[in-house]
Structures are given as C-alpha cells and as structure tokens.
Image (tube, rainbow, N blue to C red; front, side, top):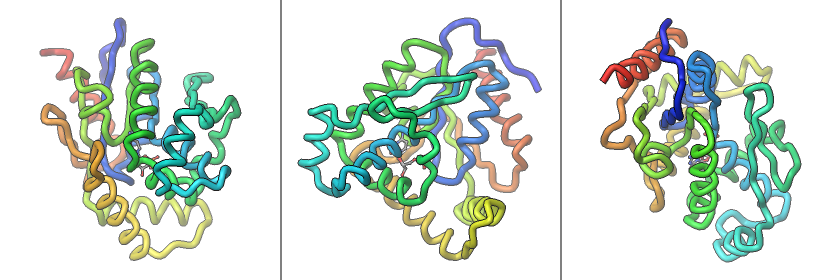
Amino acid sequence: MNAKPANHLVSIAVDGPVGAGKSSLCDALAGALGILHLDTGAMYRAIGLYTLNAGIRQDDEDALKRMIELEDARVTVDFIDGQQVTLLNGVDITSRLREEAVGIAASAVSKHAVVRKYLVRLQQQIAKERSLLIDGRDIGTVVLPDAKIKIFLTASAEERAMRRYRQLLDDGKGADYHKVLMDLKARDEQDENRAVDPLRPADDAVILDTTGLRFDESLQKMLDIVNKAYES
Ligand code: DC
C-alpha cells in the first residue's frame, strides 16, 4: 500500500449511492493518508433527528425554513482522536445517528434546498480549515467542485443490498434480503431524482465500481486513484 503524505491542504471528494461502502472505505483511506474523514450523511442525519425530536414533519417546508432561520437545529462537528463527533445544539448525538428512523428522516429532509444550503455552507467552511476526505452525495458536484480528487464509489444494487443484509444479520437484527434490496432501490431513486443537488458523478470524477471486489482491493484502488492524481 502506498500513499502520498498530505503536506498541504488536500480535499478528496467521495460520492456514491447508499451501501457502496463509502463510510468504512473512506475511514480506511483517510487513515492511510493521515487526514480526517468528514461524513456529511451524519449532518443530514442530525437534522433528521432534530425534526423527529421536535415533531416537525419532514415535508413541512415552512417549518424547516423557520428551523434553519432561527438556528433551532445547530449542527457542528468535532474530531476526537481522529474520529468525527456530530453535535446538535452542542450535544453529542453520534450514537443516535445510525437508527433506521433517523436515516429515513435524513433522506426526507435532504430533499429541501433550505437544509442543503445550510449544510453545504458548513461543510465548505470545515473543508477550508484542514485537509479532509469528505463523503456524501453532492461533494464533487456542489460542495467541493474544485477538489483535485473526486471518486464516485458504486456497486450493483444487488451487491450493495447483500452487504447491508449481512451487516444487519451480523448486528443480530433479523432481515429479509428482498426487502433490503427494495428499500435500497427506493433510496437510490430518491437520491438520484431529487430536484436539488441529485446524486450523480461529477464530470471529472473517477468512477470506481466495487462489485465483486474485496474491501482491501477497493481500498487499494482508491489509493491508486489518489496517487495517480498526485503524479499528474
Ligand atoms: O450517507 P447516509 O446514509 O448517512 O446519508 C443520509 C441521507 O442524507 C441520505 O438519504 C442522503 C442524504 N445525504 C445527502 O443528501 N447529501 C449528502 N452530502 C450526504 C447525505
């Protein structure tokens, strides 16, 4: 494994659909490069959690506008021992973010321009201060359009669903593969067809399809993309 040390501000944008292995691969890649990993999905999840706690319907555009304007849902991130901690109004809510209901709420609030504008600005501010690998859905297209390195990570829907299914079984949660696959396709559809900042590869992104690849093979391919970008 080989990677160029980050000795100046480096921004790496990684986008891709749900279940492409972004979180774990990005953690490993950032670790190998010695930079921090910002998971922007956690920020949408924080807003989703706020709406659940505050009883705001995720399709109530006016209520979402008020929430942002009045700064009722202040999202901040911190890095402790290299790991992202996500705060909502100063309270660490990291442990709540993987809940299924929070993911669904996050997906629904992420359709709204007012929410996206707030979080995109925050993400751009964070990226100005330090070298980062940022993962999300719109990083290469909207958040960091000038990033030197853009990777679009994908895999077949069936393989992504199988990975998710195995993860649920490993976590001791019962799961039905066909339901997992249908939910995943519905999330893809929602992310790709959203009117504001839909999921799509930036024109200058390298597309990495990890179907049939092991974790270490996918990671090595990401490292190869980074190294190649620094050679040119
Ligand atoms: O990656 P994730 O599952 O934690 O993301 C949660 C939701 O947030 C997902 O439905 C898509 C949305 N999201 C987004 O719209 N833009 C991002 N940059 C990151 C996530």
